[in-house]
Length: 262
Image 1 (tube, one colour):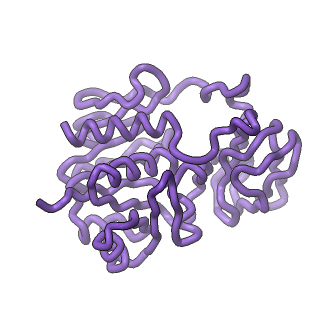
Image 2: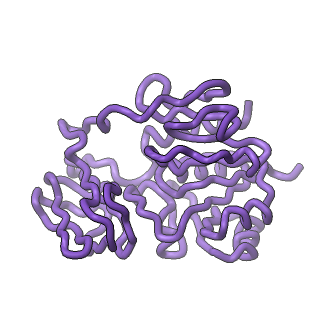
């Protein structure tokens, strides 16, 4: 029997964890995103494939192509996850996915109806209601409900401060104070000091809010909107959690797998 094909939207840490788990469990998976996205946790995602042509995460390789025929060949080869920025309508028409997972995690955007994109559609994050924009929703807020499969009702609304790490919460992040081209010479995992220059947007210099290691950093030469999260510091230094699949994405991905297999 042919393996089910899953279309996962979003190459951030959550979408990548979902794609990774489904790929490892025998599904065919196509990852989709916009060109040059502003994802920050690139050490915990397949996002770098969009910039460098390929990327590895926890033993799984992803390869990028905007050409649908090349994507089909990567699928047929079966040794890597295909990542594409082709129009979503083109991807759906070419591959007729059995399952679609919206893992874009657009916290302040009301998701559009997507039940026409696949036989089973799953929405992750706030603002999803099962049976409305998608058939199923998955809870993504920290807590006992994280990863819960929702077949009736809505996910929790966006709220609360980010999880505290070594005494730091919201102050670990830098958000773009202005819109423009994000430029940086730093790399994921680098040690930085408090007040160190990390990047620029036009004439605006962005400084590290505290000492630690760069857990999140938008790729250089990416256009960002005002308010976009562009830098994240992990204050734990040598114990910093920078690479691989994190606890929250892993639990969300497990929820997706449960929703599909049950």
